[in-house]
Image (cartoon, rainbow over all chains, first blue to last red; front, side, top):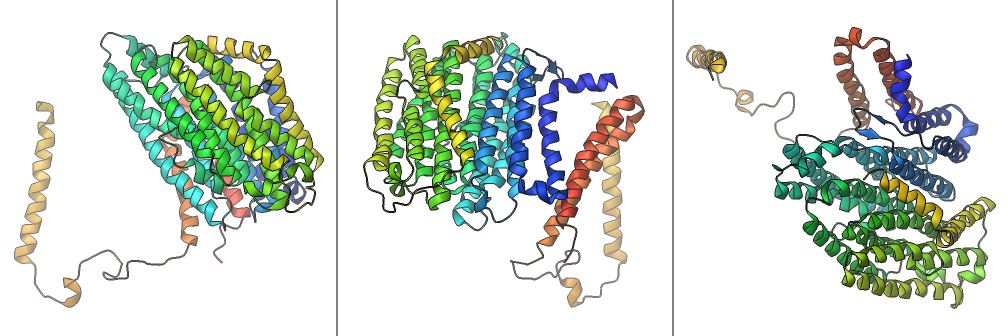
Length: 478
Length: 117
């Protein structure tokens, strides 16, 4: 019996989340009263789980012959995912009127996807990684198609399904190559093989490139980005927000773990690959965002651009690069979720996602307009907001590696992105509203948005605590 | 190489028996041709139908539930083989697994997936 408990102990967070999911299933089935408030139940229980998890700080263990590791990095990542989860659960509440049925199942799917993300944060084995990635992707297949009668949502789900399955195939193929060479799916065994004299670097690189196809799909970097605009537009907005933060971050987190294995062994190819990917993604995302008319599509293109910035950190390949990537992701979490929350609240009142309808938002709801303004400025990277410091760290990491042209490209793209973000700000503040009705806001959304804004400004001004935490986390995997 | 010789013998013997039976039926069997016998055979189905057959979407639900419990059995059989070695821990693990599957069944039941009409 003791044996059993000590075996389960490393998985306490995952089991906690699984119990919440199953418990909510039962609650939903047997209690009509709870069925109505299932979102609040989910939120409260997840918040409790986050508190318990935070109190477990510094309790690092490994399990399953160290294929499952709780180190400082996985602790940081699981906190990232839990915060994302709390935001998504909260904003889903403002969106549930759009679903004809299956309200509570939507929350379960969000929780299931985050369960996949949290297991992904701790895995150091390709097979476990694949299983947790599939848990995320399969939940998103369903979530993206949740507006069953809306052709756009069905299109989004179908596109995500076909391309997701294809990229999973590539990922598996890459894993099989790496396994065939090294005889193991475990990261540390592969690293040992890669540094041994008999390693076949070329085939290993080929395997890594195939894995990158699968990871690139998750990150939404060019040339694996084709699904992003359509899926972002068609999927229910909370699912889009979750895709743009949780799923994207999952891709980058995999890459952070892989950096240590592969970067030392083919540095030249790695730097070339990631500078090119980063440059193309930056240009494509930022130029693509300019002509967009739908705000979700617009944020989709902007998220491609952000993937480009994040890839700059991997192009540097240094510890500073990884610090910058993690910091950027935290700032992106608050900023992007804040923007999407405004989009949800706006579409709840007006049933529109068109940018043209945002005209005169400052007169209809000064609070929403100000919130979206701050979020967009942080996305563009205006000091003193969080996005600025993230971009600063990334560009510094790239400059330290003498990739000056990439740094210049990144800085130029900040200017381009300022243009299209400010176009929306101009719409909101200068243009006259077509329909001057004020937009009602419920207090809980106001509190949530204020917390997101506090996160954006707080991370922009007080960088040291998070940066120190990130540094100690990255140190744990070196 | 030699350890596979017995396999080769079994293979040759199987081929011989099969070949012999086909040969014997072709010599000894009566030949009475009819229209039904000339048709291509596919167990139970009409040989010629429209390409887009329709059948009830309810079958998919049943199939999904069937798969879940089928896979459950796949786990149960090897577990039963080593049950004694696993001890109490193995029992607890399997109870946890079955518990999750049962939640799925209760969910499907409650939502009316088992009602045919």
